[in-house]
Length: 309
Length: 255
Figure 1: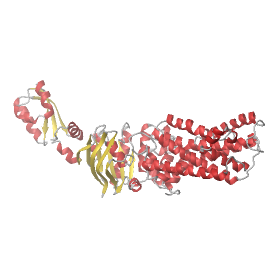
Figure 2 (figure 1 turned 180 degrees about the horizontal axis):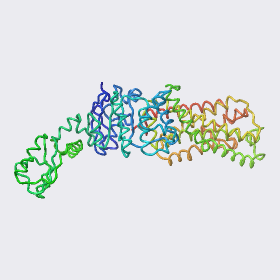
Figure 3 (figure 1 turned 120 degrees about the vertical axis):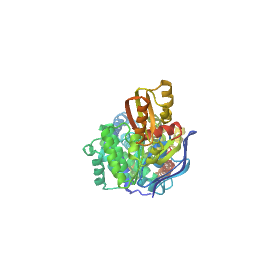
Figure 4 (figure 1 turned 30 degrees about the horizontal axis):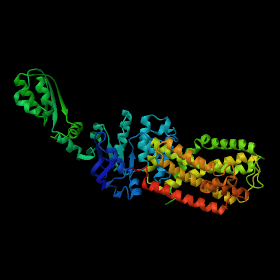
């Protein structure tokens, strides 16, 4: 079942085109990452999904319900954690969650509200006014507000921006549980290690366009293998290994006469052969690291417009 | 449209709770202000002017002050709630759930009516000690108080959606609501005005709200209460249509 269907969505603000025909399909139960630099259009796209922004062209459907023409049903299916740390200073945490629950038409929802608070470590703060909470606690309440109506689709817009490690761990534990129970999760974040750890599939946005859309494993496979970083104490890199130097390392090493080289390694068993050739050439290794390619590498390559190996 | 939906009731309750939590500012302060008006104007003008035949000035003034409090506080409730929510960003909690534009407008207006009537009742209870008041047609009192509060609550919704900063809302309040209220016959009968201003007053819808409300106390008014009712009812329908249409279109709320 398709949880979110985005078809050719375009949106302009006073001549600036924030979204240029974005199309995406996110399946029910996916943990989906929406990545991109600032100004790529992530928040505009999320606001369009949430019905806060109306697209100029195209459509967005949540579980088959159009967010403009069938907004009531679409909104029932969706829980959104906004990026800004917003709160209503008149109310306590419990009042805030009860009110939010009521807006979604739910009465007598205290059992679930208590469970959400428990899972987000908010129980001790239940009767504290929102003004008195720390930034991290306010962020937890925002997450709880998005979950009060048990939406099948959860959208998290930078949920861990500026919060401590404890909240991140608490949050990801709870969100992972919800995902395992079948909830679709859409995440935007600048913390790419989080996206790599959590997301099954990723879309990368750049200047209002989708520039990459693939599963995490396929994306990581695009960066061929790992990198072997070698600091040479004596000697130079033998000619027979020069073709393995990572393309972005060529200039630096050539100009410096380089005692530090980064070599591409497609498989771990290649390492043994590389070391043997270094030994044969008389080079002596001072230090060595084997670095696994990660999402940040592919993200930077895609955003730089460099061809992805 | 479902006025009894959980969503409507929750938003209505939230708006009541919001002003109740700061009751000193939202209820007690306007009651005290109205009492000061009565003490000053009533003391200075009592026995010197007569606005309605057979009605002393303090008695004449009280319904005007009560209605003025109802109107101003009904407006303040919806407008301040919306502008605060817009500026702090928490309006998103209302915009994300499946609340219809009907539910949103009716909840804000209903809560404004409650605040207007609570303040009006407070003003009446305090000021009624200073004069003898009659209740010739109490139904008119209730009808005009409800309609007046509903109109100003709706105007508050419109102003709250339109304004992007407190400054703009203050302009709406100080250059439109306040003059229209003060020039509607709170402190005087418009029959005492020169012909030009008498004619101008008939274009002020606030005049009909106050005049009809006062009729309920004394059975006397500048124009027929039925005329006032018709004008006030039409005014409310027009404003409600504007407010609902603004929300339906997402004016300044959904971009």
